[in-house]
Image (tube, rainbow, N blue to C red; front, side, top):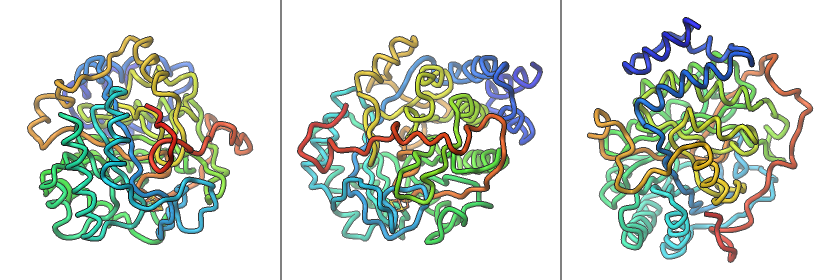
Length: 391
Ligand code: SF4
């Protein structure tokens, strides 16, 4: 297909595709899907070989958020029966982080619910970062605490944070449909603050909220313009008790097309397969490794992922390798930045994340009544519990 040949050539040159080319990837048929994966896989291998970076989420503070992000189980008014707890102590967070590192994670992502941190919260998280760095040599730490105000990014950087995550989540045009308590511009501002402070910026999206192909292309092009080092791609986990509980809009094939489009638009960036991969890709997860170069290990913020060992087995069986601590994630031309990437969330529950939605009829979208609540397991182990974490 000429389209794929063009996209591979552009990806190898780090050249931005046109919007029409990105839209055409999303419009490919199931018969063309393996060709799309193979083409985007060439771009992935050019910049990241067969390496898979593992990241580990630690939910420092869970639930009880005053913001109203529709996709989030921790939102204002959510009746999802998730774990709710206030700030973990530094040693509790460090213990959770150590489990992820022992499982193969190179990066720990410290996430807290809420609009954004107070200065006291930043001080508290700074202590946690120091504890984790002291007890886990060489680990990268990403903070994900919501909207940042003056000086906070600099203080986190000084405390040893390598990266900061704040997702755009959806297109600017639909943002207000998903969240009313903060704006798309607020989110862009925080990503820029992280950049300016010398933190590696991590910013991604959530697919499956009813958005159109145009919305997906909009948000991925906006992300490219922001130039983050990593782009987590979440697939909505439609939690019972949230406004998007009935939005079961994704098929494995659609997820793969979205990941391929993201890879073509952001060829040399750490594209991370984030929340919702088990729920929506299911047995097709290994194919996604040809598109992304990073995943979360184990559980998400408020939902459970597959067992950490299953993640490692999947990577090995698919012919990929876990990226070691001594390897630089990003290609040389990008790694002059502060460090490598960071990630963000559970499809729909990352701190400070939010998104918008415009329903659209599509042939490759699962029927609206294909509700699969059996696939969503609320997290009951790890941080905030007495039960050993999944890593
Ligand atoms: S995404 Fe973050 S800011 Fe939005 S409701 Fe959830 S925890 Fe709160």
